[in-house]
Each structure stands twice: as C-alpha cells, then as structure tokens.
Image 1 (cartoon, rainbow, N blue to C red):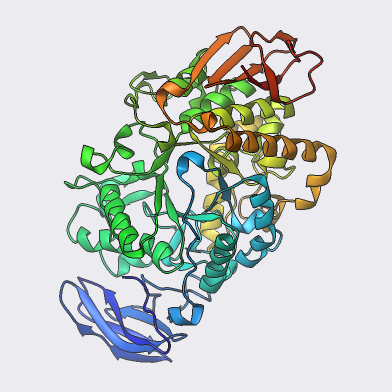
Image 2: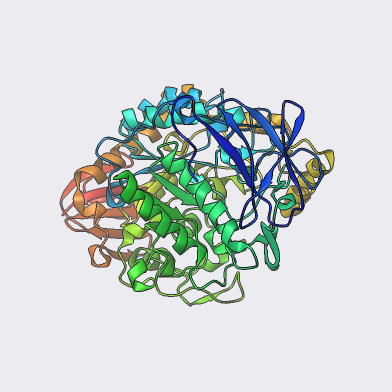
Length: 575
C-alpha cells in the first residue's frame, strides 16, 4: 500500500484490527468511529497531508497508526499523514545502479556519520564517498525507533522515516542527493522483530506469535492465523522505501530469524514482490540479506527453488580474515582457527558448508557450490562485528595498521562484493559502540545489565563496555572527518583508494566465477591469483621472498626490492 500521491489529495484512514469490536480515530481531540470493512479492516475519515491522528482499539488509549508514514513527536505520539506531492517525486538514479559484481558498498549509520547525525548533514560527505569509489550507500535502519539516537534495529514504526534524522523529507532529499552523484541507496530493513519500546502493533492484531521463538522473543507471525495480513504489512513497509522514497534496494536484517513454515517462504514472497515493483517502476532493484544459515537457497534463483536474493552477507569471509590477522580464537572465531580456512572461503564461498562447528557444537551449513561469487557480500568490518565488541574497537586497533591493510587488500581482490563500514577507509580513531536511547528507566537498566552480562569477562580486567544508554557513548562514536588529513589516516585512505581503483581498472578482480580464483599458502606467504594478477601477502614478522615475477601494481608499503616483501605487507603484482 504505497503512500497516496497528488497535490491536495486526501484519503480515508484505514487500519487492520481483525479482533476488535470497536475502532475509533482521534482527530483534534475528537473520537470518530471507524466503519468495519472486510477481512479485519476498518475505515476512518478522509485526511490530507499534515493531519495528526491516533487510533483507539476497543476503548484503549490513543496509539500511533501501525502504518504511520511519519511520527514527528516520537513512537508514543500521534501519527502525521503525508501527502507525497508535498515531498516531490522520487528521483531515479540515472542509468540505474551498477551491477553487484562491479559494486563497492558503504555501510553508513546516519546518527554517527556526522556530528549533526541527520540525513541533511550526511549530504556534506557524499562527494567523499564518490571520490573513494563507492557505488552503493547502505543506510543502517532509518524506520522510526524510540529516542533520538540508536542503531535502528529496534524500529517500531516501519513505514516512517526516523524523525530525529530529519523525517520523510530528509530521507527523500538524502536519496535524491545520492542519485545526483551516481550513488545507489540501499535501506537496511528490519522485518524480523519489533523494538521493545513503542511497539503497539500487538494491540491491533496478531503481529506476533508464540508458536516460534527468536532471539527477541515471540516471532513475527508469518505462518499462523491472520498471517496473510501480517506478511502484507511487512512487505508493504519494505516496498515503501523503494516506491515512495526512491531507494534502489534493501538489506534485510537476519533473514535466518524469519520463522516460517509456509509453502512459500516469506523472503521468497518479498523478493517476488520487489521484482513485480521493479517491472512497474522500470528500474532495477536489489535485495540483499543478512543470513547466518550458510545455505545457498537464499541466493538461488526462484526458478531453481531458491529465495531469489541478489546476495547475502558472508560472515565466513569476515571471520576467516579476522582470525587470520588478529589471532583471535574465542567465541565463533573458534570455527575459523584451522589453517587454510580463509583459503577455503575464497575458493568455496563458505567455510561452514556442513563441516563441524566447534562454536555451534555440531555440523553447520551446506556447500555453496558453483553459484556466482557476486551473490556474497564480503567485509572486514561491519556494524555488527565492530559494534558488538565490548568497546567497539575497529580492526586496526586489534590487528595493527599493517595487517589491516592486508585484510583490505584481500577483500578487494576477492570474488565477492566488497563492503566497507563507515570510517574504516581512513582507520577512524572513533569506535563504534552499541548505544540506545529509550524513555523507560526499567528498559534502560535492562539494556545496561544485558550489555554487562554479554561482556562479563571484561570485569576481571577492570574494564567494562561503555554505558549503552548514556548519550556520551553515541557521541564517542561520531566520525571525525577532519582527522583524515593526519598522516596515519591519510595513508590508510590512500591505500583504500588505490585498492578500489585497482579493482575498477582490472576486470579480473571483479570476476565472480568460481574458477576465477586460485589461492596458495607457503608459510607466512599467502598468494591470491586472479587472472593475470597476484596479491602476495606476507603475514609474518620477517621479510618474505616474492615468488611471482612481474610489475608491482601497488604495495602496502615501500618495497626495497621487487623480489622481497617486508614484514606484514602485501603487493599486487601483474604476472
């Protein structure tokens, strides 16, 4: 149900409340009884753009519309109707986004990308992303969540652009400005759960079910009674970012957490709906999923029985690189401790493809097979992998600058779709910690306690995670763009620019075919062959002999000899 368009248009308010005996709309302090329609829907008065309204179910308190297009005063207040004509038509990206095989994705958190923490303030640095070689900006969730600043994964008003970031008009303008610069925009869409504060949907209908459980409690109702309208609600919310705001694609959060025993899995249905919208809009759209089940069904074509995602995040690549350059072996990194694990990921797509997982205490995953490798998104940092550490440390703080340069080079010569996390390109000095902003004192304490319990081992060393509900924690994470000119940061920025430039100039580095890569390891020397290019990485603390001849295309540090790699360095060589 995309938002209405047309200057001066008004339309009847409607809400789904299948088990209600009475529904009232609240306009200007007056209750207006809704008219019962079919299939659990109720119709209210016609309203125009800017109208504030709320909804009462069975005489209960006024609540925001579950499909609210704007919550200007937060998650507990009245909704505001939007006339899309007031925002102007979405601006399409000229020529459409580049294919994923040629893409460089940049994950961006609006609230910490700039000190302003808003859609409009982010525009100031879009040219920097273009200069770096970024093709897709992936916005962490922008649907309305409680408070001003948080990660966004606790959204509760799934059709409304977050008011503290600048609301619908701010998001529309940010996407418009990205498109003017040739940047595609992906929206991180969280459909697998609702946040803990301000989620009133269960007062309207059976949006949740106890039949399935997730890390967040009762699952979203995808396969129980009345689930058809719940599925429609979630799909419509995702399509809104594409149809009404002009975004070019979606990143679906934790698709492995959709508990669905239906004949057609929810993700497959959502992909089908996006493809139908793609045909109507006559422009390409991308759907990427976060997926921890290590099963190629997620990216297999619909005609071949898959869900049809364009790609999914590949944590195996991150974990294998991280374990290699940091030496960490705790938690899920235990699955990546075995020598040769990174080589296996580069060749086979997954490391966990049915093998025994020490972390999970059993076999996990299925072989990825011969599917193209550009259906896997790879990264060495992300909001999850950085932010879920106790102190939000970035990779260069754990592995050092030299080994982080090697990790970045492996990413850029991999057959996967590379993704950067904001600030990694200049080894930003700021961490990315977990933080949230909620009104409930009880919930604030629960968040604090949960964070302390998750990282209890730090108490033994006298450290502790920053207070997640203290505004200072968010401020600690705001990028300092001015530091990019300092020598240490400028050096890393130049390295990332060179790597992205090499990937753009050399098509063999973007070849997604399984046969396009060969990997070998001899002691501390790792060699990754892509066509006529070889990335040679010296992971050791002493010099290594380069056993490939040819011209050096680029190197992470100055080479005294074309035949010798200094410690903790790498070079891309044309054979």
